[in-house]
Length: 72
Image 1: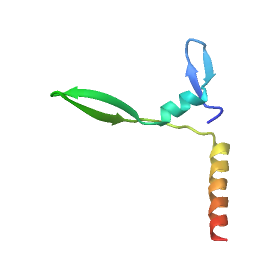
Image 2: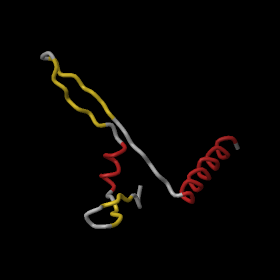
Image 3: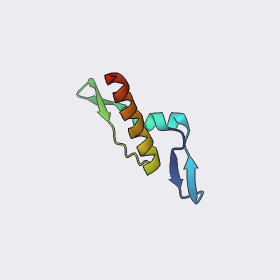
Image 4: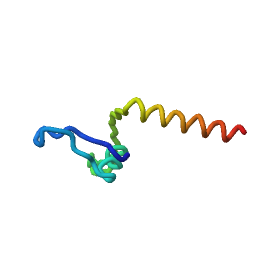
């Protein structure tokens, strides 16, 4: 999660996001809808995650190490 950035056109470059911002992007957003005098919860989530190739390789290596540890 550290190193997550978003492009800020006002600043003219990339801006680091805080941990709370990243957590909020990746959790479900619940909205309270009022219809026919009944409260209903609706959920919506959309997320696009782009990772650098070297980071993705590191994640896959950790997954493979975990599988080997479980088997052995």
